Image 1 (spheres, rainbow, N blue to C red):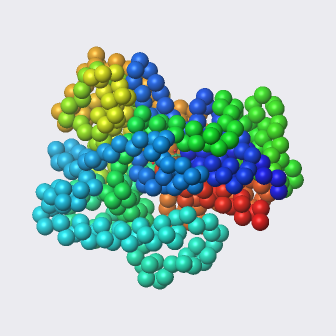
Image 2: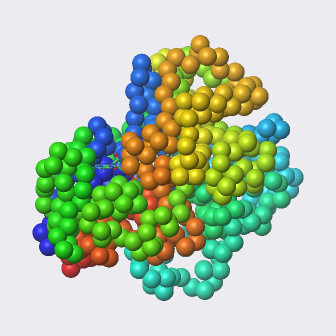
Image 3: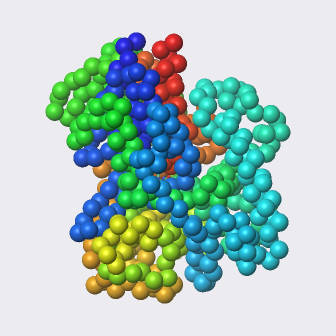
Length: 496
Ligand SMILES: Cc1cc2nc3c(=O)[nH]c(=O)nc-3n(C[C@H](O)[C@H](O)[C@H](O)COP(=O)(O)OP(=O)(O)OC[C@H]3O[C@@H](n4cnc5c(N)ncnc54)[C@H](O)[C@@H]3O)c2cc1C
């Protein structure tokens, strides 16, 4: 096979696949529809304010260190990571607050404030999740395996028991904590994967562990500072990046991939095509005509997707008191809110939301003395919402966010919001090709993990590969960087 590959989409998964393939001697071209790479991790710049469009919580920094180390470089020569400590604060409507920290003593004190004598439970939780984390990362997460037998081959029956795959994340937390507040706070990490703690497997208690142990970070210049560093690395290695280039179709020749056709009708042939566009969008749109999309799951509609989001970007005059860098506002009725959002597919009565003030860690993201503010409101998928009047829905959700903030003493008068941008689920779908407006891609249910997850190669089209959040191993910035590595490994394996 000729060592030439097209990568459709310059999201973090696409960039990672490009770097890995280039490092292995491939001639690589990225075709990115938007004006800049980064995908969901994009950038809005207005009047001196710098907003990250999507991801704002960076964890597992070692994944990025390894990406740079692969090419003999050091992450810190490209990106400065600023620690965010304490990390995330949770607030409930009854006024309860809970703040996480990677300082264990501080965390014990915080847990014991909500649940007296919960310190030993916390230590047991950290020990348990550490062993799960090690099993998951050493033996499962980055393993390209096509069957459960092969996937689990290195895992002992004892390890398998420890992973608690069959128990819900929320129930698993109940083994260590009685306080509903601690369980709800840690359980809401499921939202990182766009999932409900009542549905995600207990294995995902590794999410808070990873953050508490390896810390939470903000790249200098915002998350886009990290994207800039990875973009620079890819270009230095000789990856060709063509922005403003929308691929209209992936061309096939019988049962092999042939190349890509751009919107202007131009065709470039490639023996290998990697799509970083959301998997179900790739199959239903870009591979539509070939009729050979990877329909292993019996058609894309069978894929369970994570919810959508509405995001607000506010450039605020002055400081925003009482809010730390990251705050999650949880509802009073936790379970029914997740049910409304994920099962019934309606906008919850009490909307939970997340607020980030990145300029409190990196003041360079706002004009001197001002504040960059990001608000993320999870919403049902577009297909669940049906017909929506987005103008009035944005207004009503915005008001509910401002009211809830006021309830907690954070008063944001209209005249202080100097800059405002909003992205609805429709914008997320259109701008980045996110299927059904799903923000995080395919869900991480028990049967959409490992070999059950959408494969990173096509079984029917030779030379056709996938990378990114909806394929393996899953969503989130570190995971899609690992996804790029796994896809490159598949391609190199096929070359042998
Ligand atoms: C609002 C939000 C908040 C999030 N918060 C976090 C967080 O705090 N921490 C975290 O780790 N993760 C977070 N995530 C998840 C994380 O952003 C994603 O998992 C990850 O960035 C997805 O990367 P990807 O490789 O799948 O590519 P994507 O980001 O999906 O990029 C795909 C690229 O393909 C391009 N494209 C689409 N169609 C075409 C076409 N036809 N031709 C050419 N190019 C095309 C798109 O423009 C895009 O650049 C968040 C996601 C969202 C939406």
